[in-house]
Image 1 (spheres, rainbow, N blue to C red):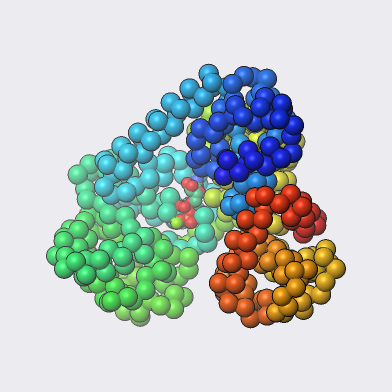
Image 2 (cartoon, rainbow, N blue to C red; image 1 turned 45 degrees about the vertical axis):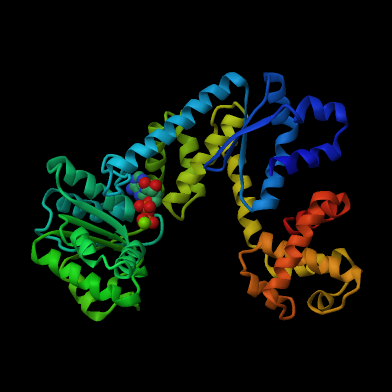
Length: 439
Ligand code: ADP
Ligand code: MG
C-alpha cells in the first residue's frame, strides 16, 4: 500500500517536492491501527503532519476500509518506537507462555470500576474468587456487549491464583470449546481433552450463547459440567442473555445453570463511565482534565469497549498534533469518529442513486445487463463502492444489482481497483462520489 500511496503523491506533485517530502519517508510499523512513519528531520515531520497526512488516511480507508492513524517520527523518536515495539512483542510472548490459562493480565479486580450496573456481578465475582465451588456454582453473568463480563471472569481467575497459586484455571470461549472438542474427536484425542477440561479447579466459559451442538459438543459440555460440579469445582459462564433465552441451549443445561446464581450487568451511568475513563487515563499516565473526561463519557453511552476506543482516539489525536488533551480537542477527535460511523451506514441503494445521478444514467441501467461502456464503468464503480462502503456480503450486493452473481461483483471490484491505480480521472470521480455520499 505504501508504494501505491507514493505513486499517487507522485502524480500530484512536482518531482522536486516529491523527492524532498515523500521519497525519504519510511513506514516503520503498523500496530493497533497506528502507522508509524519515519522521516529524516523535524521539518519534514511538521510538513507531513500539516499537509500530507490526510491523504494517507484517505488512501488507507479506500483500500482497506480501516481507519488508521499516521504518526510521524524523526530518527530519534523512531528509536524509542522501535524499542517500544520490541518490548511489546517480548511482553506478548511472555504472557502467552506463562499464562497457559489465558487470562488477560489487564482484567483484574483492581482495574474494574464498580458502578450501579455491575455491583451485584462484582460482589458475586469476589465471593466466588475467595471461596470457589461453594455457594454460587455455577456463576452466570449476562448482559450486552462490552459491559465487562469477560473482564470480571478473568478477574476471578487472577484473584483465585493469589490465594492458590497452583490452582488449575481454564478460560475458553464457547467457540474454542467447540473447536477443541471437534479437533480432539478427529485426532482421536478425547482422553487429552477430558484431562484438560475435567481436572480444572475453575472453568471459565465465555459467551455460552455460541455453544452449538456440533458433533455432540453440548453433550460433552454437559458431562464436563456434571463432573466439575460433582467435585465442587467452580464454573463461571457468560452470555448476552439469560440461559432460558438462548434458543440453542438444551433444557437440561438451562436447568443446571439455574442451580447457581445468575446476575446481569447493565450499561454504566455517566458517573461510572467517567470513573472508568479516569482510571484508564491514570493507568496510561495521561493528563486529562475532569471536564474533558466527562465530556467523552457523555458522548459514548453504549458500551465500555467503545468508551476505551474513544479515549485511545483522543490520545492519538493529541499525539499527532503535539497538543494537550482538552475538551475541544476531544470534540474534534470524536467528530471524526462520528463521521466514520455514518460512513458505515451508507446503503447499496444510496450508492446506486448517487452513482446514477453522477453519471446521468438510470438506476435500472446499473441493475441491468447493458454492455455499453458508459454504463458498464458506473456499474462497476457502484459495485466497488458497495463493497468498500457497506457491510453487505458479495452475494447480497450481487442481488441488489439485478441478481448478478457474486463473482461479477468481485470482478468489478478488481477492475476498479486496477483503474484506481493509474487512472486519475476515475480516482477523482470516485472520491467525488464518496464525498457526495458522506455529505
Ligand atoms: P463483555 O465481555 O461484556 O463484552 P469486556 O469484559 O470484554 O465486555 O469489557 C470490554 C472492555 O471494557 C474491556 O477492555 C474491559 O476491561 C472494559 N471494562 C468493562 N467493564 C469495566 C469496568 N467496570 N471497569 C473498567 N473497565 C471495564
Ligand atoms: Mg466478552
